[in-house]
Image (cartoon, rainbow, N blue to C red; front, top):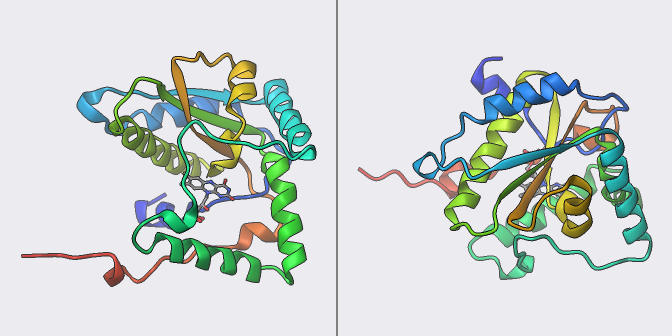
Length: 218
Ligand SMILES: Cc1cc2nc3c(=O)[nH]c(=O)nc-3n(C[C@H](O)[C@H](O)[C@H](O)COP(=O)(O)O)c2cc1C
């Protein structure tokens, strides 16, 4: 796919069809993601792709923990949306309204999103990206660039994706199930698969006008 078309085609998919992704294809996607730039070519990332029974075990943990409303938290610190600086809180608020409005009513939106969260969007594969626990903030930048390259490489091969906080919000059982050592920190889970025809997948997150965020100085 030509780049502009590929870049437009990638969007977050929140419900996946019941169809596995070929492990060889997953491997090829990761090889392409390795072209991402990193600080002094440090390549701080590692990737653990959960499929099959390992992913089923993770999904089961999510269902059980959500059933008892267990408090969750990722290994990267979060911040209340209202404390973020700049225009980010307003953009997040707008996104919330937009996605609810995409459905017929609030209850339908709420039920869909909650159900998908618990079941990890029915994804057949999650690529968990880690960096060493002992890392500068720059390694998170590197992991982000790796993740975006991975998602574009996936889309180029017809594989849809979504990066999610949701998939890393119970780090301890995830790391136990996947054998991730404590010397590594879970950054993000990238859910991979093929989009179902669920309504949620026709949602597109709008972008702000470029002049609201761009300054070119000569
Ligand atoms: C770090 C990160 C975490 C995210 N976590 C979630 C999540 O937990 N649940 C979700 O539905 N979307 C999640 N998203 C997807 C964003 O909502 C999405 O990227 C954004 O709305 C822009 O839409 P697009 O990816 O379709 O272009 C996350 C995205 C990023 C970059």
